[in-house]
Image (tube, rainbow, N blue to C red; front, side):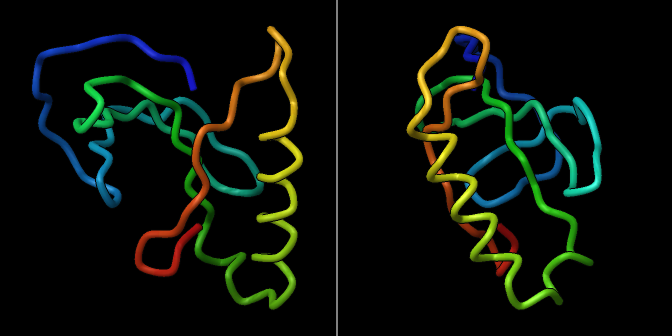
Length: 91
């Protein structure tokens, strides 16, 4: 993710351990948010999948595959993936 050190504590909705700051963009798969990861005191880009995709039984597998593929890439024009997970059943 893009990282920027911060020591201010913004208020806003949370998604698991992340504090959502603002929506950066939205597409067919869901939204991307600028978020604060308080434990590491850094800002990150957080992709949250649209809940209407969760009814597709193969979706989670495809999303996990995509995460693994992106995590293996290292290029200055590709955002580095540091973590994949779920919060309350939402990837």
